Length: 186
Ligand code: 5GP
Image (cartoon, rainbow, N blue to C red; front, side, top):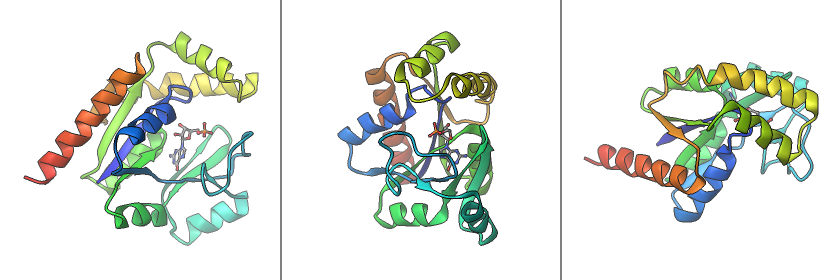
């Protein structure tokens, strides 16, 4: 099973996934390729496969990516090898990706499950991005502009979860997975 999890930057999708992983062993998230500069503490092959633009373009050319986008000046893409690695272990493969890449996966993999995490408000999102202190003021401002557009793009998603409270959002996501698995095993 392939699950797309999208949310604006700073909405807490990585935290929600981390919590979910504590409660179930059957989920794993795909490691994307990116040309973005690593943030402090990010490890190549664990958080992302960090690539030069030339390396990323080679991956596109050789058909290694299921989807890719240019987001805030950097490229991001899902390696097909990641999906094969995770599904090969019999696990649910999570793609934690932005909305344009998500739309492309929905078209290519019609049976995928898509979930959008909605931030409580645009103001809260901005204050979260500022508090996590990982990005420059310029990056935060451009990500806020992207976020405003992204929250208008939830129509194609099968599920929208309000991320007001971490525990509640994780519970809802757990229920979605259980229901989807049950429907597939019928
Ligand atoms: P960040 O730079 O904050 O790690 O990620 C920026 C955005 O890119 C986030 O919304 C993240 O989910 C998204 N993203 C990460 N990997 C991929 C990918 O492989 N494909 C697409 N389309 N988006 C991605």
